[in-house]
Image 1 (cartoon, rainbow, N blue to C red):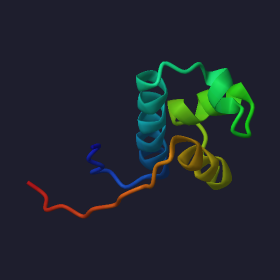
Image 2 (cartoon, one colour; image 1 turned 90 degrees about the vertical axis):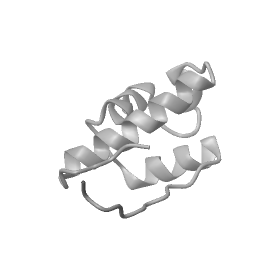
Image 3 (cartoon, helix red, strand yellow; image 1 turned 120 degrees about the horizontal axis):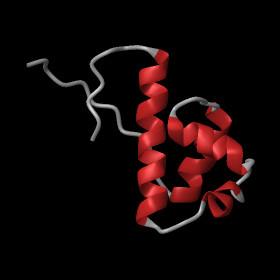
Length: 77
């Protein structure tokens, strides 16, 4: 789980990218294999690095990994 305290677009992009990169590494998959879900390898790389977010690509990758996004509001420390 990633805790986001600074509400900015780049923070969300980075958090989603980190999770996609973690999933890919856990499955020992190359970017090219993941890109076969419907994107260029460079685009998947940029998404994993948090430089790019396209909702359509995010949806395709969620389907590829068979995952959903769970949002939970938590109390601040």
